[in-house]
Image 1: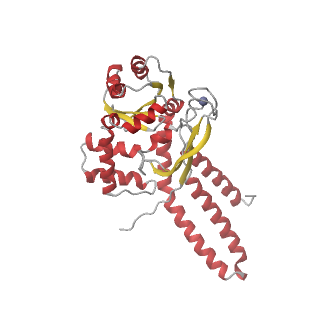
Image 2: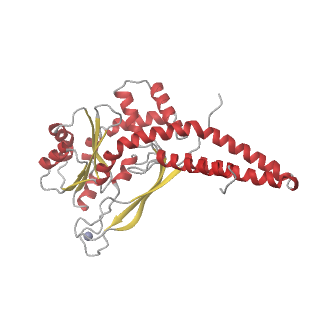
Length: 348
Ligand SMILES: [Zn+2]
């Protein structure tokens, strides 16, 4: 069978810590290292992730050794994984909730990834499933990790991030609780109800670590706020803008994503073939340069338009408020207007 080739662009994104000020002295944090630079494949795009670490610039500050990370960057994929956390959670859900077979999951994933020009082999997928089950056991492992606990003591405690992720539209939510400062996942649990009592159970293994909590960042869900307030009444609690805005933008984002994917499917292959054909004709015309001057100019213009269309098809979304589908439509409309002018003999 002939394999359909899909072209995707890698989107470069630079991540900075969500915390802007030193937890000890309040100084504005400064960039000090690149924690990692890696490729992450998510369900919607291929990202080149640059993760920047910040520190307090005040030399005499007791917190000057603490390295601040971006929790959004850490939330993209587990350390050492190229496939994103969203894919990992999807694999886990399909297996454990839908009881799909390995082949069925592989087929679903292959279809989803084909839209962004990526593939996954069965072995990689099984590896993701293992990681998913390991994730759900994260709490027990972390409690026995002495080296990590020492690191936490140096940071003077945990900066918790509580993140509820709904992999599908079902009523299940996976709660991931991580320490923002070390990037470590402390516990993960799959719940069907998000009452305050249930969330306190989810957070219980973290409380049992008996480590100081210097702050909590979560989304604005009331039961989350209540559970945190009861477990760590002293800890300052910040509602994460990233979480809040992501929630607000999700509906539009999903709708936009469908439109974008649909446009890509309909146009990408054709545009690409058209350009290939242009390149061939240009080459032929160039060989007979003298008699084909005018034709060559025309071909150049057509090829430029095709390149613009291809570029427009590769516009990506950036959560929360940059919608790839809308931008794509706007770009294509501009190209169309320009072509219509050209047809009438006006300027381009
Ligand atoms: Zn400081």
